[in-house]
Image (cartoon, rainbow, N blue to C red; front, side, top):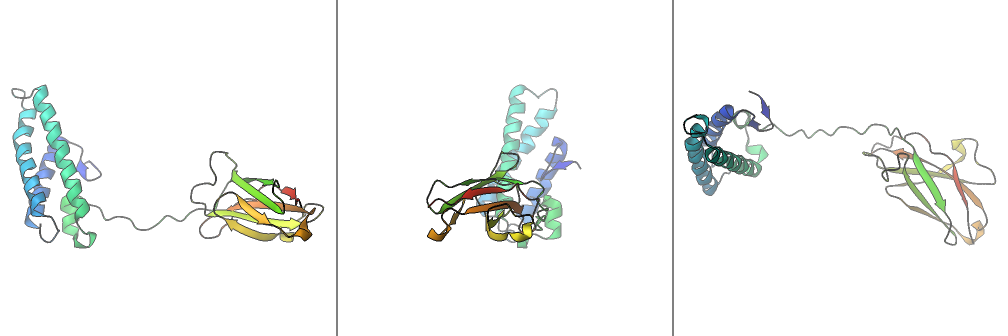
Length: 219
């Protein structure tokens, strides 16, 4: 049986599914926490379907109006069943329930985030006294950070020339959103600070380094 999601794609199979699933819900209403009102609604809509569906399949009785009515009942039945299914506690569903109702057990295993593959693009803004505002976005220029990236690691070093090796730099922060503000004391006025950035995922695994960026501390 070819199904997309809960319901079969072919109407003949859908008709069989409506009959078997609603019958199952009626017999197990209390255990599955299905209210009397919802049972009555499903019964009424199934009765409509049992009348209108054969008419829509018979060349002698099938008209545009009949087909339109059949489609309306079909949509209402699917909507009502989805609503009922949403209210059934997951813990109440047995393997047999899931097989008859075609309710797959939700996957609660999260796919681990991969190691970031793109580089941040950063800028240093020193418009405010004793402060560097570091902004960053992804190298594609379309968003602040890539999907499944936790934040941006920001490394820095004070000096006249850029560091030769990243080991000369210290981790200043791991910031979840741009911008990051690096504040200084009066003694830092006039000094140059170099920065290098990289994305990290939820496990702290880092991607490739950005280019060096730098700024002078205004005082």
